[in-house]
Length: 239
Image 1 (cartoon, rainbow, N blue to C red):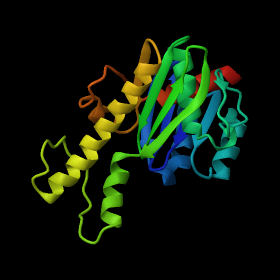
Image 2 (cartoon, helix red, strand yellow; image 1 turned 45 degrees about the vertical axis):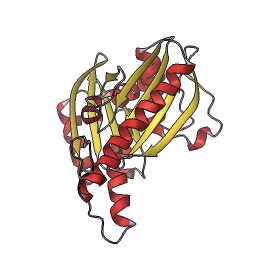
Image 3 (cartoon, rainbow, N blue to C red; image 1 turned 90 degrees about the vertical axis):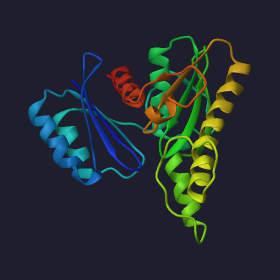
């Protein structure tokens, strides 16, 4: 069994894969990660582990996993199954690396645009030659709400609401700007890639996957666990 640990900006996902299939998944707060991982190691026969983190990793966690499993801490030097042509590979987020690995594994020899709608919205493209050049990073939905509240004197802090057609109140106007603006942005990026690449496959993932999938005009594959599947693929690729 493989243990996959994804430490994001706001939460931690811990998944167990058995025979390349997702066996279990929990979402936790960062302060309980050592306790939860210890519990999993006692209950499951974990042989291999990969950690993807956007922050500093607890050394106690590293020590535990090295003793119990074969461990990979994903970074720019990790061997990947795709050709990485990013000009500054050391600055490339490990989450984006994992997403391109998933694209390589699930859509071999295809043009794939992966959209990760989380804290930030990232757009990453893997071409049919298995080449990755980069993409784009934009503010996510919650970040836009927080920015309007933080940088103004009177605008309230709102949470995500369904798509608003007309901003006939201040709060509705904010919802209209954030939600509709995000949807128009994503559809616009998709259309740009469609116009420049034949037979484009589009994958939407991240925390806002389910919410946004209902609003987008383009045909997409919605997969909230795409990043975890990519991490599992990288782990298997390095065993």
